[in-house]
Length: 165
Image (cartoon, rainbow, N blue to C red; front, side, top):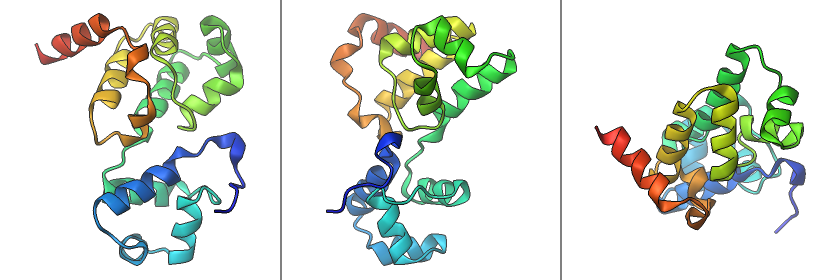
């Protein structure tokens, strides 16, 4: 397997697309033809040697039920709605600005503790709900790599109960 051209982007999207395609028993050609791209282009996306354009990413996510943009894009939207820069948010949370960028661009998944700090800094508890939904809902397969043992089970259950009410 060739080494990714984008190691700094931690592009899990391509891996998730490949996994979802195989889980659904679809061929490279099936998926590529469905979204209007070549087999070669899809192969490069799946091996993380190509970052897909936003419209292609959305088509692939919809076709394969891999919805990866909700969490990070919501964080970005929430941050911008209060005129906070990524650098300001990073300082408030105690992390590097580039990590905020990776979260917002869906290149990285924060820990539960970082998510709580982001929610507090933005004054937006819905971020925690999105995180819980993402790690407990198979459609948000990007989060399947999240180590749930790092999430305090009492807090996770309380959030799930709150959402069910």
